[in-house]
Image (cartoon, rainbow over all chains, first blue to last red; front, top):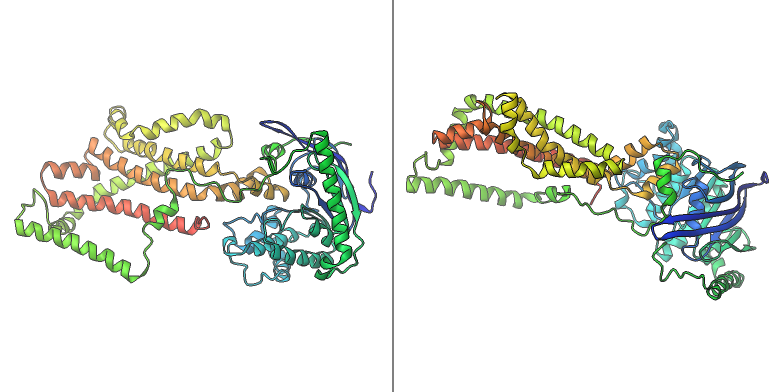
Length: 274
Length: 292
């Protein structure tokens, strides 16, 4: 069925939304494989179905066609092995940071007492100690997103699906969060699939970058990033880094041009659908 | 093996056709009749200066009132002095107390029935959009028709006992609780529901942990407004018929031109109203303060 090595296997998945203004083809026969412990990024223009892909893999909505397996089992209902981190921190405003972080365990009816030490340790690792009893509105955007990462790690899923988690943050905070994420990845050895529209972020973080075409999103190219590990922040200023980024950008520009020639390009600058 | 949708619950269905979108992070603005923050914030007292100011105005009004009555020697049956009202309140308290308790009993039992039915209806109806559409016009009818108008009819059928009044109170407060709660329960935040779903939350867990807390600020507003409407109806219903209740005392004392006693009853009525407001603004501060 699938390679034992590959914890995520996606084979030609498509997704069509039945919107009020007719069907929207968000995702078209997209395929992907992610090895255990790997860090994969998926880039592409806005609206090319990246979020759709992650929601489908989480089991939040079914794909229209195609096959997808996580840890050898076809995706369906949301599973404990898979954690998703959303674009917005998506914390519950009526709960404190600690209560928010314990929320998944509460839903899973776990004995929260057993997890409290672990959760406090996680909070410390993202420098949120002392903010356990604060409400989300009292935190900055970066702190909120750090809390949401802890929330995803609290129940120890094997796979983390990240949907432009730092997209709402300012550029400096975003860079810091990227570095923090690499630290977490190194320590926890999770398998991460990271969606972003920022090519630099994808190249800095991932071992492998999947490029998606504009909507309907399908495979355009795959880049194996040969930058050394560990990656210091300075690596983003080096020539090799820029070369890879430029190459990916070229691919995307070409895809857009191809779609324009075919007359099927839907510019996000003029579209209301995300 | 392809990915087929098996048995899907309503949330999965909703998520299935909803294009994931997080553009608007803000919660939808409250569309209810009242907003708890505005009702609470309006009287948020900060510092001794404000307290002194409020007390000063009270002293000025009461003192001025007392003085005018004394200077112009207004007889008590025309308009009573504050001192006369205070004396009447103390002296006839024992006589008024049974009436006070009856009105309180009408109010609390009618309110508990009305609010419970209103809240449960709101929670259930918002889950079934079709039913909600059908029932809402009737609820609006109940809100726009003063239930006081029904009291004579109810008394004709049920007698001059406490029951017509309890029914009137619940008919006045229930729909108020309901429409506000409906507004609250309609605030579905898809991203938060998706979050809970991603941890495998059941429909009941989503209700308890996401939709109910999200609706709570509006529910509290509904409970507050419903309480005040219930009080108005209880006092009004007392006036229509029977021999007991604060409303009955108002009619009785004004017919005898015993204005000091009349105002003493008014003070008792408004003390119930103020208590309702205090209770729910306290609850609101405690449970709905996350919403700025």
